[in-house]
Amino acid sequence: MSLFDDARRVIAGGVNSPVRAFAGVGGEPVFFRSAGGAWLETEDGRRLIDYVGSWGPMILGHADPDVIEAVVATARRGLSFGAPCVLETRIAEKICAMVPSMERVRMVSSGTEATMSAIRLARGHTGRDTIIKFEGCYHGHSDSLLIKAGSGALTLGVPSSPGVPAGLARDTVTLPFNDIDAVAAAFDELGERLACVIVEPIAGNMNMVPPVPGFLEALRERCSAAGALLIFDEVMTGFRVAQGGAQALYGITPDLTTLGKIVGGGMPAAAFGGRADVMASIAPDGPVYQAGTLSGNPVAMAAGLCTLEKLGAPGFYESLTQRTRDLVDGLAAAASDAGVPLATESAGGMFGFVFSDDAPVRDFAQVAAADTERFRRFFHGMLDAGVYFAPSAFEAGFVSAAHGEDEIAQTLAAARTVFAGLA
Ligand code: KE4
Image (cartoon, rainbow, N blue to C red; front, side, top):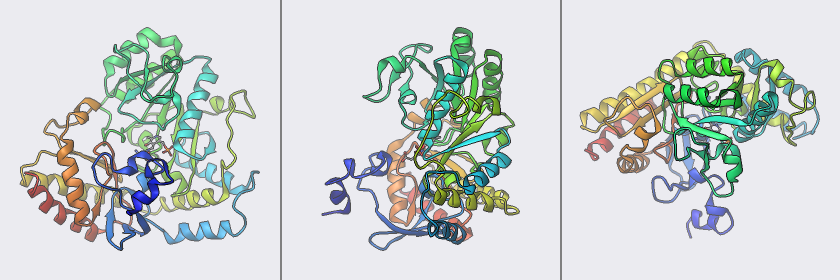
């Protein structure tokens, strides 16, 4: 019996999160037993260079000694109090310093919880119900955000999953990402009814798609004019594409920001926060209810705080950005030499590649039209060669500070061979 078959006996789908099941690439998922730096070790003893990094958190590399030490030392003093502890104040202080638009913070335990809470806060603070999201962006699995575009451009949404009530879907409008005209039309029609816009400032759930010039600026201007809140979902881009996230990269100040992944350093922690006057609406100061038994868990705070502190090392982002560029430029060159169309993107320690000759990729339709069969063959060819990319054509990839020139060189050598087989 395979490990996956064994898991499927007792775990729904054999995994605790769907993307891990390899449905996007075929075959059975790889089971891991340990990781260190840029490397994963499989249950059957193989070592793989890791470009998933647990979907983003492992920016320092796996099992960073300082983070592990912080976790162990904190755990020895107790795992959870369900009461305030100073570590929560310290990480909130650090987040406010690194992301100045976040004047107040609330810690939660997952990105889903962060975005769900931010949406409720926006609705409660504005007294409005309608929200705007964008096709191809993913904000976790809360009901208001599992919504796809309705039949018409501006018709209210329809559920993208069974179990989401149609009544709730009607309050979510889904627009094409990077479509400034669609944003203008939506605000012209819905303006005063809008509680908020939520957007991944760099989309990382339809591979990697950066904003076109003017897109984020249009969202900012329209939200300010309409009295709607602009929410940047930086669960993935936060501390990943720059120390201050995508908002620092593009110079746009959102009203609320959601964080996850890196902020927990690999432990279950996430956060939402922003303007002090908006956050004052959150219980217990205000009427918008939000809570969590393990919110601000000391062990998770220790992992996150140690991680954030290490991001301040001199040259951290310059080196990470260059290493990521070396990878992506090398993949582009190898694909080109093999005559394989490949569109690539990178920002900070985040990257994407799409098997398409329709570059630059700027919306979901282009990603959906890309050659996913070629991606599948590339994924497995690289896995066989000892390199682990995200098992889906619709995910971004991540480089850590532990990825050295050797890992990049080994990856590119393998890619040259695999691309040759894809031509
Ligand atoms: P979580 O609830 O999975 O912690 O965060 C949800 C979320 C929110 N916002 C953004 C921009 C995200 O990327 C995510 C989660 N990302 C996926 C991978 N693209 C997590 C992997 C998974 O679902 O297993």
